[in-house]
Image 1 (cartoon, rainbow, N blue to C red):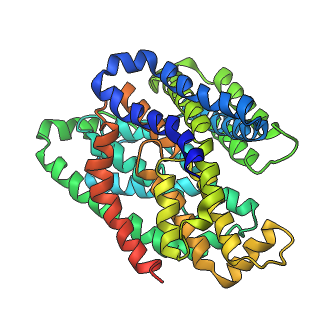
Image 2: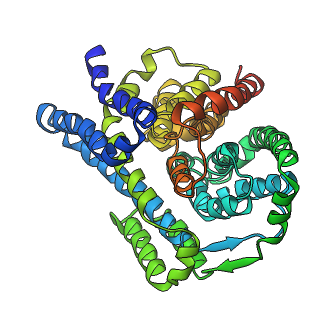
Length: 422
């Protein structure tokens, strides 16, 4: 048991590198992050390939990574061809409404799609007084928690849908949690933004009021967005879904005027960084996820609250999609009927007899993705876009300690107490 867990060390080292090295030497990290990521991945790949001779795990993870980067990359390219400018003053109320609309969009376009479409307009409309908390709350609300109502919203919920959870089941059973969490977060944001707004000099407010006009350029890319979202529901044949995503990105790139992309400061730097770092994350997390799947039933996780916190804590540092599946498997093992012929039948039985467990897994996997930059794919991409737009963003530890630990975790404690204590 312990010897198997030792192979999670490369994953821990990679997380530590992402958190610490940019603080110690940012220039070195920007030049060498690919060597760190792939260098830590190589021992794990070698172990599975030549020592365990377990090609299956590598292929399965490789397919998941290809699907992940095709989705993230295609949405990044297509959204980079959409230029949205909002006229008027970015008051605290306007900003709060914008975040609420972004949360609703996340359930229609997915958290990645909504993040990529809205992050640039968000930066532009606040450009005269934008600070780190604007980016952090965007990640909290649009890139994560907002997408907690539909299978389109976040990958774990889509996997649940494929495993037998009805399409509208999550919305029906989690909307009070979603609404409460979102309401508290937007209230927090409004309070902080109002203070920031009052401190802004009058000339800055006047700049915000008169500097922008309503613009919506590259509107044909909405069709390519719908093309990508629709392809998510395609499972066979192999790689048809990814092929459609790549085709949509290619058509978007060649049919969009270069002036539109230039107005968005579009370049491939952010998606390159995400692709390289998550290649290392996907490879090094294989032993950790397999250990969890193998020993989840032996580490005393039985109540809805334990499923909520267990799924959540691991989803904040591991990919939340496989974490969701592993805890779903643990729930089926605990409560699924022994006579069930398929995993799908076990899920159906739990929905009838122990629905709060599915709700705990769903909420934990989606909401806790906001706790760290690597908790969900859009998080790191939003940070990278903000960094390249000269917006100050918190470090890995700064994000966690100043914002997640002080704002998100108390909210999650409240959610756990209200909805998952029994």
